[in-house]
Image (cartoon, rainbow, N blue to C red):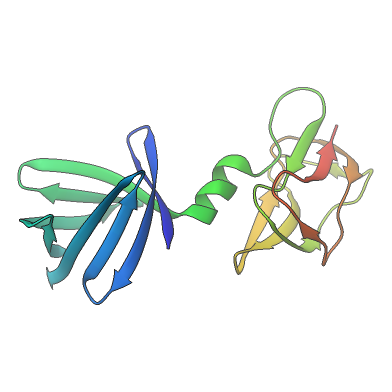
Length: 166
């Protein structure tokens, strides 16, 4: 499974495979074999590259705060699909025509607008099913729907124009 891990302003894709406490993490071109066990509530014993670590992990306002020895990391973890949709999906704000494009391949589940509809920032435009998850796309700006280029049930590819707002 792929995740996007954000520490500060830096985001990296992390692929995780394995089970039962034995995992392989791929970060960029680096591969890490990790043995991880929950030893107490929020306390993990980790064996990484033959070196043992104890990590204290807790949730603070949606971020994982991880203490390892005297080092602290504030980490945000999202499934890669959710990250792509959050950062690349939605109608861009600004002046002139605004275009909603599909951030990745999927299928249109529901179209909530039609040409001529007046919309406000935050209004639902449509719902796409991608990787077995339904994702609601909202307007990034107020305006009038100029074009709707998709319909319910239609497959779409990443980059396809879905809705144009003026």
